[in-house]
Picture 1 (cartoon, one colour):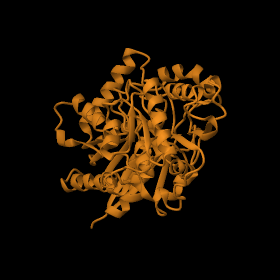
Picture 2 (cartoon, one colour):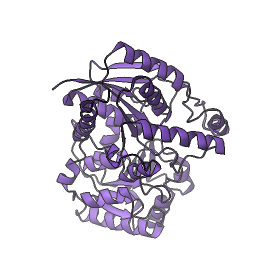
Picture 3 (cartoon, helix red, strand yellow):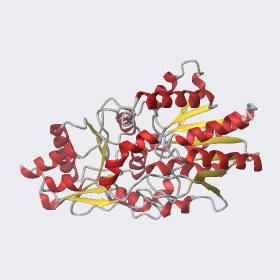
Length: 417
């Protein structure tokens, strides 16, 4: 098999940590098995909320990583960030990492001039990454795959400071969707929404590649061992309308009426959740732990030892969300309590896999009922693995990376160089 050289443009890359890093890391890890040699164009490792050196260990030993200047305007305190974020949104567009664009485009042009790359891949957000790829595409006509990990102008969590900013972002988005040779996303609803923005583009240009899970993440992890406490674990971030309030209200109600004995319950929030004030306000500190950010191996360890995994997506804007956490939960093979829109994409995946209990995310009564039911199943020894392993197997990261490599092969074979 001929080896294809791939220039991969991604801001979120080790030593940075978090969910946005893992999709690119896993692609880079497995692409060489499909005849693709990746080289990464990223940014200097500036200030960021999370770092995770463990992710670097998954990268190929011979991987070449090139870094361009980018100033990330994260300030030392949450109060200062809240104060200055509106200003940054006025100054920087398409996002607060816009300073990466000139240096990233120059570095990319130099790399393309020096080495015979066959295809360009870009990951966003930040959407500045797509603008770097757009410039390189226009300069070289290399085939280009644009990966939208989240929506751009249709993102329900983004608010533009003016009509000008919104128009400019919509124009950039149209250019990316029109000029990229292939557009992918990790969720069918996101893919469908992107297609609707450019109705004249062929449907075959768009595809969904789920985030998936990597079985190797659990290599060396101890097998699940039941403890004397019913352990419910949430891993990941909480932000915007994605909050733990309804779950904590339901928990407090069950503890208050004696349905759940405090001494037999342990709730863990692992990640940048900001949930500690919510816990303290409800007087739940004796049963709920805010564990803070953990490395990726530590996080999957928490998942493996949970009796029940907690998933939270908001009612508004959560219908199309299929976060990477869902697939890690499936890979851990532990039951899931999914507080998600019942008609959304996440609920569909969990039903297909037979992976757990789906409850509307703001329905405290329904959450309390589901939590009580799962606790009773645990006490009776009935809360175990019920997942369809054949369904889960299709979300293996290696298999999904093979699909990406197939798109690279097809574009190169079409002579789009």
